[in-house]
Image 1 (cartoon, rainbow, N blue to C red):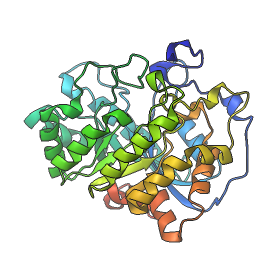
Image 2 (cartoon, rainbow, N blue to C red):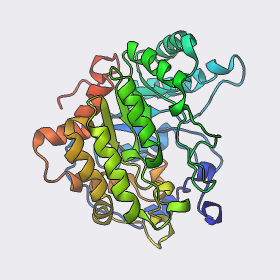
Image 3 (cartoon, rainbow, N blue to C red):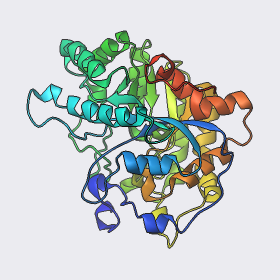
Length: 357
């Protein structure tokens, strides 16, 4: 059970131990390959904050990280005002971080060049002014929405959200909100466990004009009732991912496989895994996604600092580079930067990276 693990902290996420991570270091592979990291978080917590200094320390650890995209995590919400407007505080907070990075005083990486925020898609017509407010607050960086959707009936399967069923993915109002989101030209990130993928399939079919970005390779579970059963879960997960791949409006983020919920408990070892072991562990999931979606519908992600509880930033990107070692130049460009740039329209933003990919 998750509660028995002393290395778990807030939201049942593995506590980051920098001294432990330093026990495994290795040379950077393909250090000149440009990377857009399309999925990370920022937060201030007593057990370990992850703000601009910590993000840039990782981004500057050897790989060529040109820019990043922040994804909502419920941080710095407004303490007062209408409930549906409180998430504007997170967008305002991240915009400040992005402005600091855009000054150039903190190096070449443009942190939070894109911001994926939170607007409750079940709010009906109130969604439209809220989206406009987030766009205005972000100064041209607002590039998507993510709602809190990950849920499983077992109390031992949690990451960020604990709520009673049915979750928002099954709510007809959520589909209506998704249609409104599509009219704004914004994609929807969805963090769902593999058991919820039928609801994601139904959503993508119901709103074909919406780009649906499936986070963390579709959330294959390995804790609670799925503990030690990755081999049994894999074929069911693969079947659902094949169904998602048939829908042209679905894109997938490749990463998140060192979250606690996946059940690969590297954090319990005397030293962290190296990139070869990570690549071997992740290969069935990553290669399946690339094979069925194609590189132009896949993007590598870090999911830091959540995944940092089990591996370091340099080792994570080394592992992803190993997994892409057989890809051609165009495929690598898509996986490491191009798909993210296109899906989140970074090339059209004032804060876009003026680099040749």
